Amino acid sequence: MPKVDLNAKFVQSVKPQKKREEYFDSAIPGFCLRVSERGHKTWGVYYRTHDKLHRMALGSVDERSLKEARNAAREVLRSAFDDIDPLEHKKQERSADTFDYLANEYLERHAKPKKRSWQEDERIINTDLLPAFGGMKAKDVTRRDIRALLERKAKTAPIMAIRIRATLRKMYNWGVQNDIVEQNPVHLVPLPAKNRQRDRVLTEEEIKSIWKALDAEGTTSKAHRKRQRITAASLKLRLLTAQRGGEVMNMEWSEIDGDWWTIPKEKTKNGLSHRVPLSPFAKRIIDEVKAICEGPEKKPLPQYLFPGPSGKAPMTSPGKAIQRIQVATGIEFRGHDLRRTAASMMTGMGIPRLTVSKILNHVESGVTAVYDRHSYDIEKRKALEDWARKLIMIVSDLKEAKTEA
Image 1 (tube, helix red, strand yellow):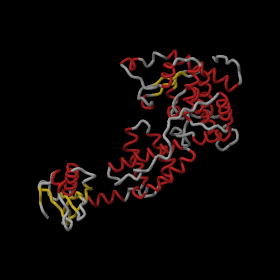
Image 2 (cartoon, helix red, strand yellow):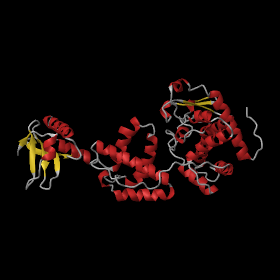
Image 3 (cartoon, rainbow, N blue to C red):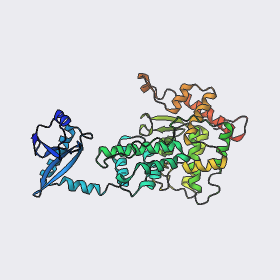
Image 4 (spheres, one colour):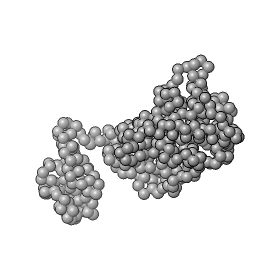
């Protein structure tokens, strides 16, 4: 058991011997470099607990630098000094290392504290990943398993398949960084589809057909009437306000003040609060949602305009409703197409692109952007009211839409 001054030059230049050799660091007791007869180099540390000698692997030279391995060795030795067996502790942690555990830890420790879009990660995990891999050990999920899932999804929703792959890759990367898994099985799994930006804008005839299908939601299913009507209203509001789907689905009654809806900064993509004027048409839909939620018995309103099944959280996805509309109309579209269509229609009506950009709450640059948040309220209101009148004409076959009081 030779003792050497472990440094970067020695680690790089040391040659394999006829049998496996371990070189112990002269600075940290127990810390060593193991070189196999085939030249594979790995870090390790020996420690003693309860009068027993143990060795703990600290990864390969390719995975960890000398500095990182030394720090890891110090942590192991500190734990052993406190009579905590690092190997036993690691074994206990491994027993909980199912895919469900990895997904939950990723959500609670990374996505929710650090990502404004964490709800999209949660939806993908609950809707697609847990049904596929829940109950499996995270380390047992293979590239073949992942490719099979993505190929199935890509047949009907290619863009969502790309997002599933991205979420899974981030989750496993985080798991590797936090010693929950040792490798990322998404590595080298190809994209399931071309990741191209959609430019789908609905025609007036398509808008009319989709709107009529939304009006029909809840008329054929008594069991799901309330949920279908609420979901349909959320899609209508996305088209009327040109706001992002997640922002509409997360609307709270407390955010509405008269004919203004203020989206707090925690819910916006650019981290800045956003004031959305509500046209009389939009207010009418919101009033319809209120009546649905209160019911004949005038129940207290939930926190969210569009609550999920539990009533305590917002709805997460209108995917099933969109699928029903697609079947009913024969029109292929996505939820985000509603926002894009509204923006395109407004510019086509002659509304300045800057005003439309303010409505969309696009990221602004420059010093004045910080002080310019409310200076376009008048322009935004007129634009959205003009768009609402245009929309009424489209869906009602009217030649002129009167302004509602």
